[in-house]
Length: 373
View 1 (cartoon, rainbow, N blue to C red):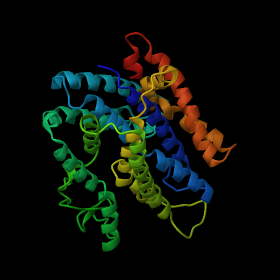
View 2: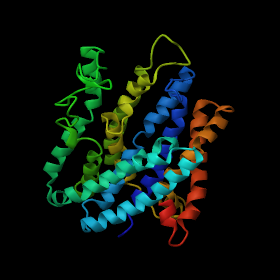
View 3: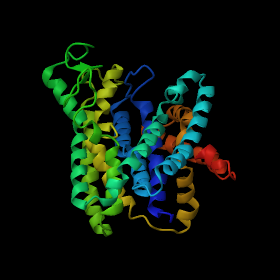
View 4: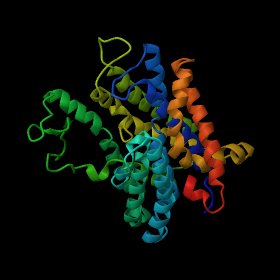
């Protein structure tokens, strides 16, 4: 398969964005879920940088869709290749995190180890995306431009559901917490056919990361190759509106009256992150904007050969290991420089350290891909 140059740029950029997001997390919640934005300036840095980079995970899903969907191999061959290539490094590093953090080995039979820092959720989700691709591929091969656009528009509606839940809750009050009474489960309002005995609402099957599979297909199959002028004309409004939704919601929902540093229960953090959910409207708009721009990156010069492509090849392994040391780097920097410099400095240092560990492992003959992805 011919290498798709812009996807290397996308991976190299998106993995750095991941490290920015995880660096920001050190500034808005603690181990007990307590919000601790230290000052208005600290809040602006954390919210601004995090919001700008929230598109990172969906960009990886779109890259997989653009490259692999529709599936051209048999279902068995495709799943064997993808599950082994992603699953073996995942299991290996889950074991490493479990050892380092004295986690429970039995948990790995049922889920990723939370002692890893939570970031490993991405891999089971990605495996789920791979399971769906062969099922949808016959349809994807014959879908028309108009039909695909219709499904994408429907999916974009589902990205507003996190906000509809908040609106519903605000209108009908806060009495959601009853297990067998009221209209919610675990403080999440029921919508569109959901109830205690049915979590599969009307839009369940056309929501979530399936939308990014469809967007990847759209860009591969139907999206015109716009000039830079048209690309910017489309991308800037998408990025601007998306950022306004993502950052504006978070900032406007910081609890009033307590001053800084802010202290609140973990439920407050969950509400603040409504606009930061990977499949929420603002994030989706920013993903489209970023993808439009990055798709124009086509240079294969020395910068690509010696910087972009190596970082792209190492990106999955970098993702797997980065939480081993990101928190330590952030903790040290926060004692010496301000919030903005700490966040960016942590991301840069993590980016370089993770690469220096993973890339040599990745290059080990025959074994490298099973260790570093």
